[in-house]
Length: 76
Image (cartoon, rainbow, N blue to C red; front, side):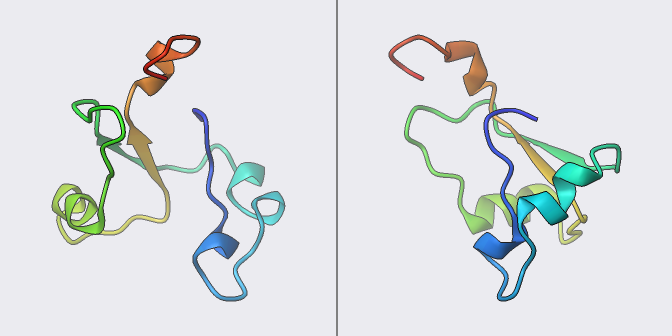
């Protein structure tokens, strides 16, 4: 799952916590968006997400950045 899983309560009023949501159903399908070309401190913004999604918003999205390759190094 990488380094972070965001709970709906972080961005949806009355949203559920991670303990009541996605983490309890890890086998469900997700769409993987490739952001591996991102540079250090580069933000991923809404227009970039919209472009990659092409107007179709799935229930689950995984952002692939490969920054875990830098764990334990200064760029991380």
